[in-house]
Amino acid sequence: MIRILIVEDERPIARLIDWNLTDCGYECTQVHDGLAAADLIEANSYDLILLDVMLPGADGYELMDQIRPTGTPVIFITARAGVQDRVRGLRAGADDYLVKPFEVVELIARVESVLRRAGKAEEHYEIGDVRVEPRSMLVTKNGVPVTLTPKEYELLLLFVRNRNIALFRDTIYQRVWEAEFDGDSRTVDLHVQRLRKKLGWQKRLVAIYKVGYRLEDLK
Ligand code: CA
Image (cartoon, rainbow, N blue to C red):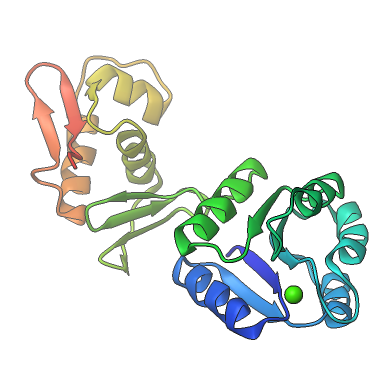
């Protein structure tokens, strides 16, 4: 799970950020003064820090000096719309900044974009009620884990990464079984049938006559 530290002394704002990011599936910790934040940063590792500039104890710039060597991405939160603050924040090594008051959608977009740039975004796919998380190899349907064999999983990932694209049987075979296709389509067909059954994808995994299969995900 992605861990985010929220350093913000205005508690209603810290709470608002916490609620919204927790809703998005992030694990949040709030801290309301600079010295306590310094202790937390010292003792823990975070994937992202949201850092208010004006804080009791130690301010955002001082904390930035502590954070920079750790390489943790930082989004500065500034009350002032002044260009000075933003420039200083970015010079100090912040990855982005948010100017208060901000919209929740902007908060989430900036958090996602900084995490993505840092290579920490949790990549996952949602196809109807099925969710695939390649990092953890977790597949769920309506939130319930689905057990797949390694080949079924590889096949699923291939379809999911190539949604709405017709995949030839020989391509599927070569990619999943990492061997030359010998013209016998039973292995592929059998695994497709099992996936259909396990995921309730009788209609989504469409057979294309004389070609192969396509995962339909039309929004
Ligand atoms: Ca403040």
